[in-house]
Amino acid sequence: MTESQLKLSSYSDLVQVISCGELTSHSNPLSEITVVRNGVNASGVYAFASAIGWNLATIAQAIGTTSAMLARNKAKLLSSQTSEHALEIAKLSMIGIEYFGSIENWNVWLNTAHIQFNGRSPQLVLNSIRGRELIKNIIKQLKHGFTA
Image (cartoon, rainbow, N blue to C red; front, side, top):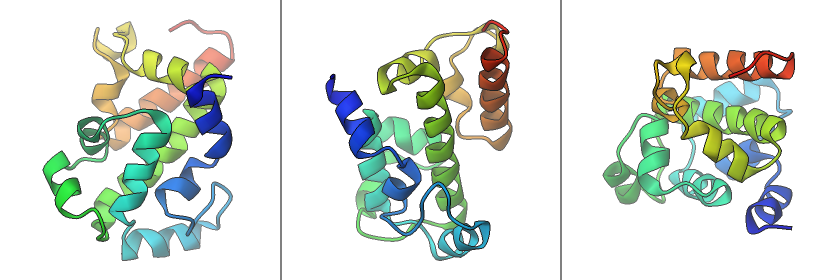
């Protein structure tokens, strides 16, 4: 078992990781709204990044902030908008890891240029709602036999 597979089995619920245990992937949407309004702790974002092997710059770009802001606020709560992005990234990563079979495969796919992204990597669109929807739709198409 590789290191990231061990991490995945230890952190199989990435929503729980990123929310510092306040939520799970099966939490009530109203609970999610409350956590988002209050803000996710930046330390959960660090734990999430560590669990899936992303550096600070990668996770910061994905949730629509800067690595400097994350570093300054490591023990603080993030804004509601940044918190919502963080939870969505965690949910999307769980979908991607499940489909691609490992964290490594998910990360490789995210960093590989694809025609559906105009020859760019999917990771470049993670920071937008529409980009995350596009990634989810492409994974859904892959599940049903379309190629990407």
